[in-house]
Amino acid sequence: DVRKPRILAYLNLREEHVVKRGLTNLLAEPQLTLAEVLLKKPESYHFDILPAGNIPPNPSELLMEPRLAEILDELKAQYDYVIVDTAPVGMVGDTQIISEYADVTLYVARSNYLDKRLTGVLKEMHTHKKLKNIAGYPSEQNIEVDNITWFKEDSYKNTRYDWLNDIFAKA
Image (cartoon, rainbow, N blue to C red):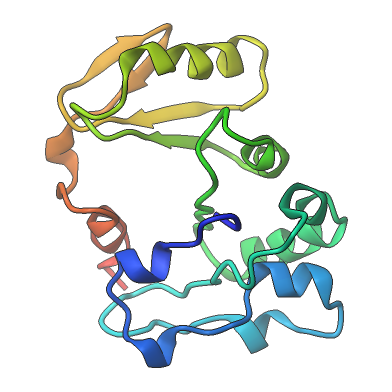
């Protein structure tokens, strides 16, 4: 999420891992390379992280840069999985811009927190094909809302982003 980047904090990474540069810098500064801003397997994690970078004054415009496709292609060539954390769906256009390059859209929602009426935004995105191949992750039970399957909490730990570690723990 280039508007409110929190991944590093959610993963409890120490300050020496926090960098001032990331995706937004790659987009705004063509001389930067991916290797210069990538965090290689920080702490005990078994995956690399491309931080959001500096918060730009024009996030959506920056994400529309043709260089985004090049960066994502480079990441797809290097990694088996590329997971992009974006702003909440429906709040801003960032997610729709990035979804153009996504193989799947994983919708993460906190159980007993998300107002179920907000699933209407997801339904509209699905109906009008604004997001492709939507999969959901609430944390209660397997349910189906408007032909979208939501997965049960037991599949992953119930702490923010701990499920990422479970996915990549095999490395």
